[in-house]
Image (cartoon, rainbow, N blue to C red; front, top):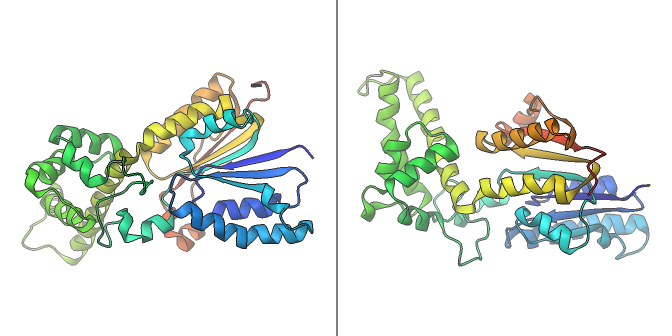
Length: 321
């Protein structure tokens, strides 16, 4: 068999990596490298995988310890993937690459991380919480001016009420929200009259169906604001753009496949643009012109997948490194 080298750019809870390991465990020359910049969660996930999947692999190979060579966990942002491949003499050796750009359940469910507005927690949102030099979401809001926050809300999440929300959040420097629920309550107070006016509703007599629609729109607005701030805190667009540049030049082998799961339009636009231009220039031999969406059953079993978009591309055989 030809050597198989798979990269999981976002280890997270280990769901994808666990499945990949089980698929390659019987191959004679197959390895998985998984990246995650979250120094807290990568330790837990690697330990869990080594106790479950990798012990199964060791048993299958009848050589305890041999299976461990199949898996490497790297505590780095996937923006460093190209540099990592260079430093480990593995440029152009990856046969398959997966990047799931969504937040992991562990991050969302941990109140102290500040990724969700449904439970109270500090406005942190850093993917590397132990990096004291990294700016938290609260520190970002303290630093930004109203016009900067307005631009960020528009660029990072296409927020239609960016002007009003930016001014309402940080116009009074003494009242910048410090927790996730403070932020959510403030955005809710700002957006509610704007949505009511948008629909020409009577604010004194909102019916049951109108109230349901209002709550849905308010939740979506809060989610977009949280998303825009999180993207800025972690430089997510810059990181994605660097990955997209490095995939064909330093990562994939000829004929290698890349699959990327995105969760909002800003990410999807960048992936689509990269794959499309790469196909036109001959870098990729094929790409997903039509986005792949989760099935009804997948959305039912995993509601967080409802906004997911999958795109793929195959590196041209002629694109040798």
